[in-house]
Length: 304
Ligand SMILES: C[S@@+](CC[C@H](N)C(=O)[O-])C[C@H]1O[C@@H](n2cnc3c(N)ncnc32)[C@H](O)[C@@H]1O
Image (cartoon, rainbow, N blue to C red; front, top):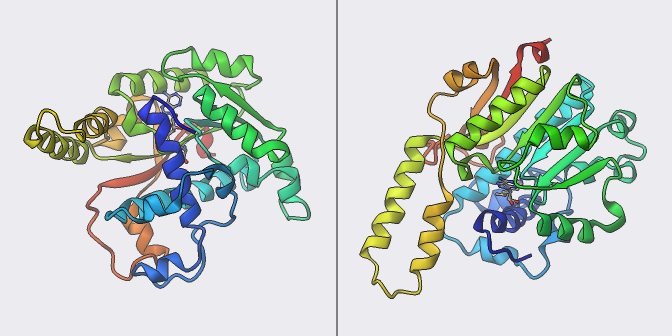
């Protein structure tokens, strides 16, 4: 699916990476000892269409593959825990892209599995760009989870809580918000508005997301800026670099301070390099060059 919006375009790239990391051989071929897939299923291939995994594999920087694979696995674990241990029945996926968690837990895929009954009671609200969601629904066809509602909206530009309520979300129930691969594309003020709205409306809330440090984002932006400045004014590559520069906006330096502002507690906060080591994707814990982490925040009520 092609889009004029570079943020929307990131969804298919991430989808290709997620497809790559389902391959059991990938990590052994790339410096690790893991011989099992990091995440299971070949579901992602359904969405790729003409987009080739080779486009991603030919990129020199394999760190991004690690980051996307690790964050998905970590978030899967938190999601499954919330359903299995805490019987959470509402999952909102902001900037869902080609997230397949609801598909993996649909009735057909859960048939005969231990927690099928619990997953049958979970409802999902997936928020993203309209064209993307139309494409996703078309490619999933009958496999789309009937408990999943697609909401076409820019969640920074609407009354998100109001729209969720209109679509059947019960703000008095525990709700897990999955916000994967999104935080860095938003202006800081939009993040503040989002967290203010959600934490005011939902008293029993769990949020999981990945983020970069602001320092790292600034460095990344400075590198791109430097390349742009060195480039010929007429160079055809300028547009691509400018789009990249416009894409990266916000990082987090002090997660605890941020969480405190919204009455949330940091329950987990792991660097993806640490997780990559734990998952045996690498044999030595590398320096967290990308300063990328995955975290779980929750309201006090959800701690019980
Ligand atoms: C990098 S992709 C991540 C997709 C998916 N969450 C995953 O990790 O596989 C970012 C997605 O978030 C969506 N997105 C970002 N900002 C958004 C916003 N303000 N409103 C709706 N969707 C947004 C984009 O359209 C895109 O599909």
